[in-house]
Every structure is written in structure tokens, then in C-alpha cells.
Amino acid sequence: MKSLEEVWKEMVELRHALHRIPEIAGQEFKTMRMLRERLAWLDIEVLPPFIGTDTVAILRGARPGKNLTLRADIDALRLDEKTGCAYASTHPGMMHACGHDAHMAMLMGAAEVLCSMKDRIKGTIRFVWQPGEENRAMAKPLIEVGALDEPPPAMVSAIHMLPGAPAGTVTVARGASDAACAHFKITFRGKGGHGSRPFAARNPLTAAAAAVIEAQGIVQNRLNPLHAGVVSICYLNSGAIDNVIPDEAVLGGTIRSFDTDDAATLATGLREVCENAAKMHRVECDADIRQTYLPVVNTPEETEMALRTAERAGLPTAILPEPLMSSEDFSYYLTRAPG
Image 1 (tube, helix red, strand yellow):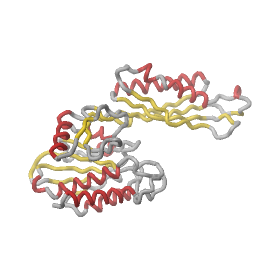
Image 2 (tube, helix red, strand yellow):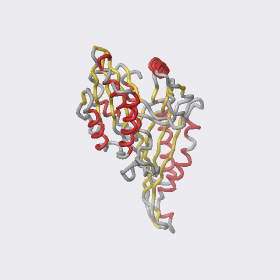
Image 3 (cartoon, helix red, strand yellow):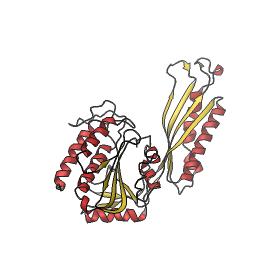
Image 4 (cartoon, one colour):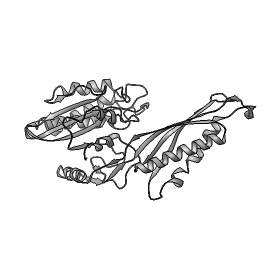
């Protein structure tokens, strides 16, 4: 068995190597190749890809028992890296800005240590390097095609970087840790024309602007004040010429909450606000609202197990004081097993 110091050094080196080659959701081919080349040196069963760029490996212990599934996400964000660090992204417009390079390296370190302890393990451990967590929620199709079927997990677990937390501290949420998230795209279609003759046009941009303003009151007017929810308009695109009224305006963003009924309420509210704004400004409206992420709700027994395990390992622990409005498709793993 390698010392933890040796494994740690290799994890840092792997993290830097992965950080140099960030790839966006569903396109993580170099990343997958690097992970699979590393796993080839371990005594572990590596499965063929389920949905293109995933890597799933199973460690079979010396004795029969249950399955523990451990997951890391592997995709990067569409960002230009300007850190100036020695291992900065070599892919323009892409960066591991959300810590997935660290997630991958940590899971590989766990695989290496656990493979060296194979004769002491009961049951199986599944390692999942999952593509497309950012915006695509590719955990859902990965699970739907059977990545967790054989053997079915008795427990699932994942880890995430937490900016602002003390380095080296294991922070655990009791109950909800991340919100459900729906992505939306609202398209307003009118009739373009000259800026000098607005009466002869039907301006979709004014309808979209009205919807943006009215959307700010949806949470306050629709949701129980003791519940939490967020409706964020994150882009509004329309027109390109100073004196031409456009034919179309498109806005988009996300809806977040910790309750699926609240999510439906907010989605209905946004749809109605946009449709009413369109009607008032004599344009048409098409609302595409997709529930992409479920809320992440940690199960009680497994949460306490995680805390005990960290404490036994001599690591400082903390309880997340309140859930985050960010979203995580690990929620789909929790539909299959506690964790």
C-alpha cells in the first residue's frame, strides 16, 4: 500500500494535469482518456462508456457485501482562465472554475487507496466519473441507461469544493444542501419595423423588458414567505441596430427552490407573467421551462456516518448552517439510494 503522502502528491499532480485540459459537458474526451489510462494501472474493473464520456469502475472486495457508489463530476465551464497559474487551462474559453478537477483527483486517490485494501473490503465500490454536471444534468441519462444497476447501490456519496470554508475542513449539510433548479428560455415574437414608426411594429423587446420587471415579484407574491425560492433573469438578447425594432427578443435564466411544489408554483408564475406581458404588448410568447435538477437532500443516517468517518480520520468537521441555492445533479443518485 502506498503511503497517504505518496497518494496525495499524485492527486495534486493529476489535478493539475486535468486542470490544463478542461472540457465542457458531453465533450470530455481528453479527460476521459486521462482517467482511463490512470485506472489501467489499478486492480479494478473499468466498464465501457454508458453515454460517451463517462468512466465507471467497480472494485470487487474479497468478501460479498453491499455496494457503495462514489461519484465525481468531470466537466468544466465556458470561461477564459486568467489566473496566470503554471497549470492554467490550455483550452481557450474553457476552465475548471468549479473544482471538478479536484473532484476527479480526489476520487482517483480514493480508488488507489481502496484498491490497495481490496482484501479487507466486503462488497463492492463503484467509482463514477460523470460528465455534464454543469447545466446539462447528465447524471439523469447516465443513471437511466443503467450505470448504477449492477450491483444496485446501498449508499451513494459525493464531495464538492466549498469556497470560503477553511481548508481541510469537512463540511456536511444535515438535510437539504442544494436547491432544485429549472432552466428557462422565453421567446417573444413580434413584428419588426423602423424606430421612427413604433406604432407600425409590435416590439418584442418592450414585452421582454416588462416581463423582466414583473418577474422580480414572483417569489414575493406566489411563495409562502417561510419557504425559499429564486427567479433569476440571466440574459436578455434582442436586436442589433440602433434604429430598427427587432422581430424577436429572448430572455433566460433559472428558477430555484427546495420543494418541488414550490418549483411548480414559481414556473407557473413566470409563465403567466411572460404571457401577460406579451398580450399587453401585442406579441406572441413561447415559454420553455425545464426542471433540470432536483433538490439535494442528504439522508440522516448517512450524514451522521460521514461526520463520524471524518472525525475518526482526524479531520475537522463543520455543519453547513443553511442550504445553498446552487444545484447539483447528485440529486439523481439520491433517487436510487440514501447518501
